[in-house]
Image 1 (cartoon, rainbow, N blue to C red):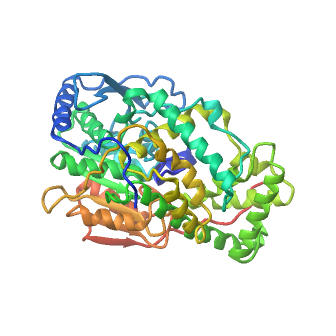
Image 2: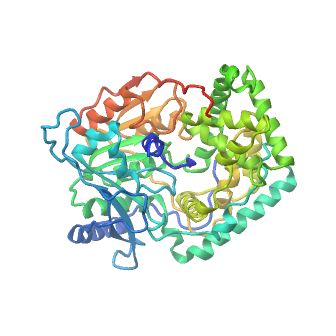
Image 3: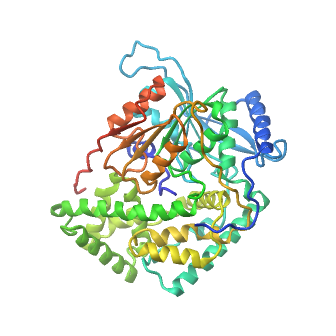
Length: 527
């Protein structure tokens, strides 16, 4: 369930501008012992607060962003035992009405944000207040981001040496041979062993239930009686856990690009559904390229575009571009276009250039970035730990092979690469959680807002429908015939009007509302 950049539309816009078989181990649910531990930790955090000052090792953050830390228990069953520190960032509410400079906007509290992952950091989120779409919200709220447990610098996890993590060039067969499967199985086993060795006995405590518990401690440390929270992608899942565990602690909550929280979906089946959905999104992208064949010359039908892509992949297999871009790097670059259609013109031009003997753009867009190896390895380690710890996974390779061989016949684009990312969970040694049954009844939780794009592949639309069924009094706003992953604060004014009305006034439409889809990206060639 992971986005490549781990940002919703908000983060994307900001960066542009600036049947699972049980595994061995525990199946404990969110119990009374841990809830008492949260009470202890939250009371302690409320007394200590957060001392905000300059952000260390964050040269890209402007001076208006301040940072601090909050201590949380590694294990909530032992709240006075080992503590870890979460790094928190904040920009204070500006109180400035962007439409009336003479009006002082009253502060409504802190808006806490998580961009998803698992493994994404929200430390850069407060910078979003610089964008026009966010100025009204930034006037009323302190914008707060944080690095969840395990995400650097918050007690960072690691499963292998970063220099070994980014291996390129590498293959990406859509129908892998038995020999290749055996090779990837061995790699998955080695990766799982590395996580166990480096994570030690504490590895088991990096999971979604603890992410939700940490959120309550952060709420208390910020001095908030009730939490205002926005989660994107995976952030919607532990946000939903929070809403189920602490319904009276919620003030307002936004779920952007909601994943399916059904216990039987977490996480093996959700990943199967994601792979299937990406095939449709890949078709959308190819149809767009075909409609602009006069610009990119990759084919005037989606099928011809697919053949152009496969031609490039075969050529890269024989001779990697720049010695570092092979089929897997090409697939990764085009997978990111399935998340964000803002990438479509850039990827299409890079492919067109490459097939015409100009590989520079493809190397820039698809090549590995050694300078980011440590961050990428840390993100992968957290992703793996959380998803593997959260729920049972099939431990028999034959189950994975059967399900994904069948799926790859109709959805070859992402299926096997998704398998290799998640396969360490088949060989995970830490105890597994039993997923919490996300559910609230009428009146138990304040009304919440769910945002979803109808053709989102990373978080298929069915997940938003399921979340709404499970959270009484929630409202779903759908961006029709659109597929960008995360739509809050993006270019769709209708979506943003609903977001602003909810966060600023507590006002929601009826149970469901729809917004027309955003305009498709314009086809253009860069210089």
